[in-house]
Length: 82
Image 1 (cartoon, rainbow, N blue to C red):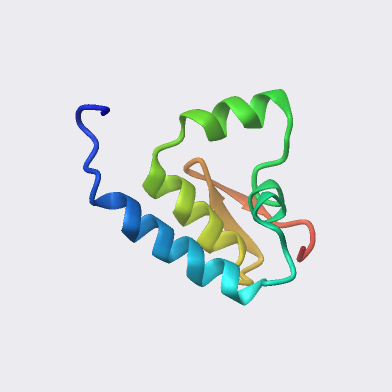
Image 2: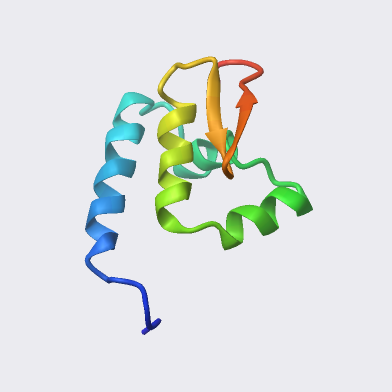
């Protein structure tokens, strides 16, 4: 087990993911994530090392319908609603 990370965070993160996914049930899990974190070498490395809270917050922001969402501490304009 990894030291320094609270295992109690897992059900909380999964619950937040469930709420996002239930709003977009037509998407497979991979699509839900890939829409926000495109599979490019740079983004893969960034998504790989991002902390859980920032990861889920980025998903929440992206799927909230806002034209601007947070991504890795930066604001980015969303190109289209996926």
